[in-house]
Image (cartoon, rainbow, N blue to C red; front, side, top):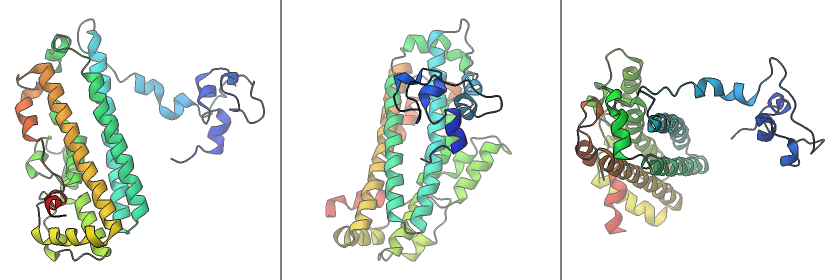
Length: 304
């Protein structure tokens, strides 16, 4: 993470205590000159914690539709908005990871994968919060959701495409000509993280089959027996490749864990009812479980 600029530091953004308006004495050393100095009022036109993070705009985005409104609808909205922010960050990190792999930068690729894994753990943990909402409380406002559904999350579909789980049909789930559909069409035609990994493998002494390097990028990742032979050799002789592969396995397993927890959360909340927006609900979600993103890395396990 980059450090705030000096102008931001002068406004107090670099010190959360000052930014929140609390006395500096609660956090000694926050002011380099005086540990007991009170928070300074914001100067007109200066950068503040709230203006930098767009806090007023952020807090205006939770708008329940139920009468009252129902207490748990605010939680439901916030959880899903936070998920969309995490999807945005994961896409951001995935682009950085792909670039590192393509330039054969192992330290950056490894550290970026570890960050993505840590974010994924946070995404899984958020389900614990959502599960505090009972089926009765969800039912109290569910009818207000109309045709909206998490099935329509364009960013999650983008993330799936980036990870290699590509299905041209998924593009049609967004309205023709919409910004969401345009983004999905672009992601569908772009190399996935596995494609970037194949080029990393080739740059580090592996004989990657040419047909994999020239494959149709709009198609999902498929297992390759020829590549598996090379992966087995790499696990035995190329430590840096083995390390990266194990991080990719961690990512694959983490996505499967997130899917499983999501399925069980939906099942305990709505049972086998049809999902909002007419989606198949639990039946569809179950069909996505245990689908490997990087099948070759799993196929070689019994031969290592």
